[in-house]
Length: 256
Ligand SMILES: [Cu+2]
Image (cartoon, rainbow, N blue to C red; front, top):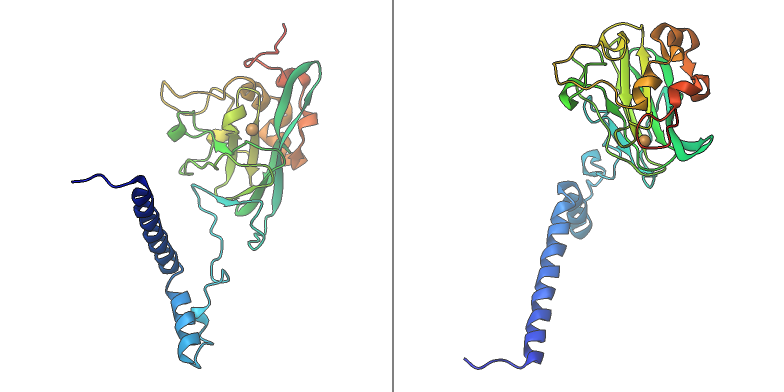
């Protein structure tokens, strides 16, 4: 009925905060999991069977799984996880002659791998992703049949994303934030076959399927990135592509 003085309200608020903090602490302890609880119980009770390997939850049991849809993201500050990759591709931002708009590219831009090989995509610069040209994303199909619509998150400098290329054939992919600037690449797995080996704009897809957009389309159409050329060279670097293939078609800076 009577209004409380403000100091009382403050005290109530402080008490509520304390309760909330305590609840969060309990949730945190619960989140540590059964393995930790066993370890703590072992300490308190003098249990001598603490050598049970199942009680050790400190990461050693968690083998990284490279998902066929989401790959595996390894953040730069994760110093405990290591994954063996067969190949490395850098995601790069570099200067562009005669334009303030930089070049965005995969290095190497074309790569040959064997079926089952794992590729580490290294964020040499920030704010990129790896994004398949897949019908589920609204594109013409430029990956082998039955390959999931794989993509990485948009990542920060120093992060890595791992993907294992299982099915044989050509795989085209882009960096979604920088597609129109020409950031696209091609990996040939085993042989230059399948939908990804067809010319740009001629791969399977419904009427509304988009082809690689902007400069990504001209980059992927560069003769140096033809499937057989990649098989021959094993790696095609950005400098191997013609200057005309890299010219900006959208996003400014293009001069006829
Ligand atoms: Cu990018």
